[in-house]
Length: 205
Image 1 (cartoon, rainbow, N blue to C red):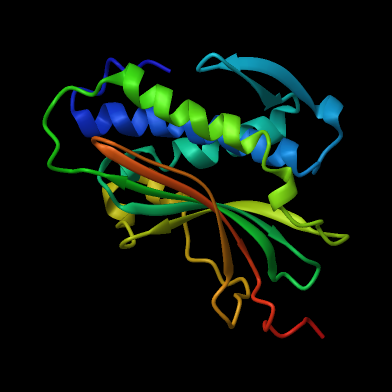
Image 2 (image 1 turned 180 degrees about the vertical axis):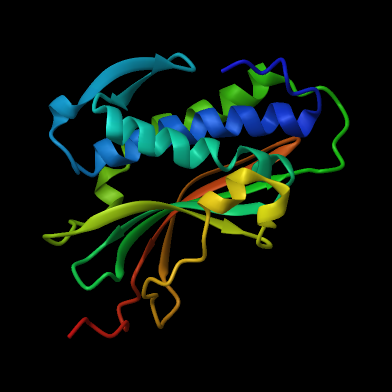
């Protein structure tokens, strides 16, 4: 992606974050074994070997979902981006959460090399995170969800029309959280963690 069109530190940072999220989500879907291993191909990103979806529809879904968030990440409106795996009752069985914060008052030039070095460690950590995850139930589905600090107005951007409030079922009890990786490198902070249902969560009927 061409970052030259983004003059502000927030624009540069948002572009790097979107590229990172696209690669990281591909890695999560590969990690969970959602599709056969042959559905992915090895690529190199930030000098790390990663997996990228071969199937055009899968690749385009991930790409369009995260690139649609670009203007909202740039404005600091996106709080979290989640990859959610649902059971056959449409209740989340596992959530990979990327918590984002972009410093809107940061005015210096972004040191891309430093930021990319920090983000690269997430990809390395993700590749060995399978023992932290749960075995998924049969007939599960998955989706990418963005959590906004405030809902963007559809009139301000055509991209806002792609993001609508979700009505899927949620956990009744606070989830169990497993940290995977966090970093703070101005002008951005990123946390990656897993969420699972609490042991006291009522089971689906």
